[in-house]
Image: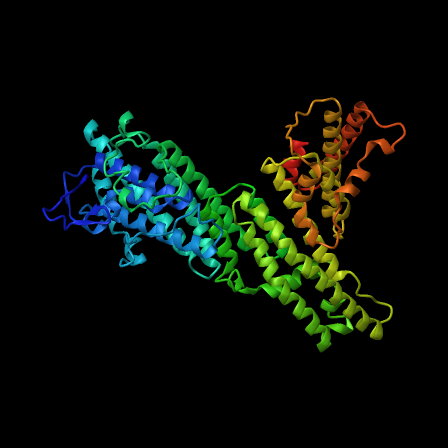
Length: 574
């Protein structure tokens, strides 16, 4: 089916760069299959790759006014795409884990099928129409198969798979708009169904009219129903980055990865501990997911920015995390402070002040990797303030506890917990420098120092991981020093270069943290000066020492029971 623009003499049909009146030409399964492919690829760009609506979704002419489409399957598909993109846009805006230069949510006056209910779009009428025709063209036992009928059957099956896939994907996103966690479990089941449909779509990519590549059109192939320049006059002088529609095979591969990411998002509702949730967000972020899956994870965790998973208060999650980490006496029913009103006021006030920094920390892990580094540096200031308050509350509770139970103490309970998260943030900040290729030798030395202080959590796994971190960082630091001594490290020579300026700039976010105290540049030079040893170590000595560190780290990682993805990744890198 091809939709053509009919232009009236007075141009009254033109609205936002697209004719309001359209007419329909001949309809067949070949054309419809091809149209589904191209529209699906435009939709993929919108919901996953953070572009501008004018440059991707609304270059598809069918989307401008689906009411004019007479074919029921194509109309349902167009409405489904609009609904999917509208829900995705709403989720992305609500989660607020995108940058303005990366994602443009403006609709420029285009209609997003708001007048059509979700129930109507997800209804079975369009699927029933296609499936009825599908049944009428399938082969029957003992009947000689006509090749043309078989081809038409395969093309009809291709359309059926695409219509149903769109409906399933829309149903999944609608499930994520509900507050009940049971809806997430429903979405997880639907994603399995979507994966099966995607396999059928992949097997039918050869059906339909293929796009024509015209070198005079640049990167825009000639595709039925698409006009890349239809919205050109609506673009601002400095429009967002260039968008290019990907190939069909890449489209299927990308949707497959999107399905896997959404399945992973659904798993977060099974977690009950704040520390486990933080680890989950960190591991998910390491995969560099698309903006939609990042936003779904954020809105699933904190529904309407009020309750965790829509049922638990964040204050209760913080208290449970404190109990599992250090089990402070004030939160123990057996302690005399448990029912003390003043002590309860102290701990409740502290927990309330913890909510904002921890919610911000979780939201930071929803941003792209480059933006995370910048935001981690800023949130250290909030955690430094929180640590100061934790130490004051510890001191107040300790003095109250000594009066009633002299044999017990309440020192460094809350402070140790906040210190643990401070060190985690500092290590994440430094490690992101390697990922963003900001590597310098100074980072390895500082990571080694931080890992020495990181083993504060009374859990063997955390202590073991800290020891592995320490050995890996020490090994890499000594290796880089040896490479530098042998002249194997190429350094840029700048006339106005200053190592001290780079050092102070790189670790400036740590200046707001009191514990652990920041290491100043002169102190770093003194502690890392090899000439203080007699005799000074040679490069061969450093290589040998680094080898021992790596071997020790390998042994530590090998002995960790039930290693997760992070441990396995560090082991293979080592």
